[in-house]
Image (cartoon, rainbow, N blue to C red; front, side, top):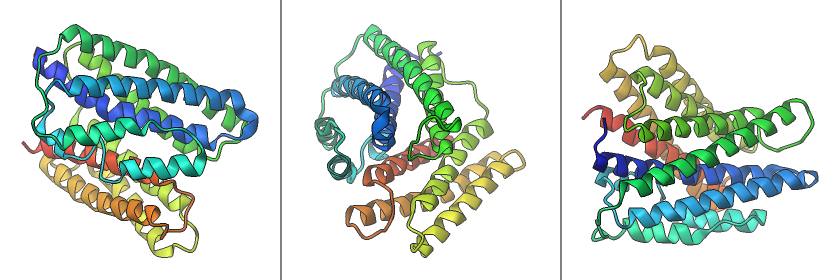
Length: 300
């Protein structure tokens, strides 16, 4: 059973990370649907804005309550590239992003003397409940789009597997919130948790490979090697000792994190030929940072 303090801290850290991830998923959907899908574009935009409102509220709570130092230092909430990636991606697509949230977040995490007042547990319980309700709507929306795409009823310039990928992440977030509302951590084995994230990072490499220009041969070869590495980690999880599979996952994740940093910097400098928005590169970088924190906590 989680203590009151653990419930508040874990809820804030979970929401700060995943609410941003969810709103960006909706940004990617909004900007990759075609003009005939005006209704779905509007729905993606509305859901994105709803998550932005929740994220702004979560950030306000975080300013008055302590987060773990490890979470703050992880660069999973924002990175040094996030604000610029938002500005460029919004300009290139014409879709809105509330960059003031990112500016406030950067200020919060650069201020070691932020307040640490107590917060009523009920406020966080309510925040989690509203996040869960919005998640249910997002999951249903993304499942609908995937089915329409599979039936060739819509054209969206995202892979069907990417839509499935986005939805699995939303479902993972939903499971975390449900467990937190019950004052417990999710009941998953080590391999279940590691395999989820190793699959996610392997798919990131697949998507990057598929979205790079064919002439970017070196980058594509690197991405393909990451696909094979993470697939191997999934296969070997059960047959390896816990410490061994964690250490191997850390090494692989650190390498793909460095690859994503270089990709984000290259895209922002217009030095990489691709159909990858800078925000997508920063997005998957933050997910690698988040997974690294989870992995290193397993060794404590």
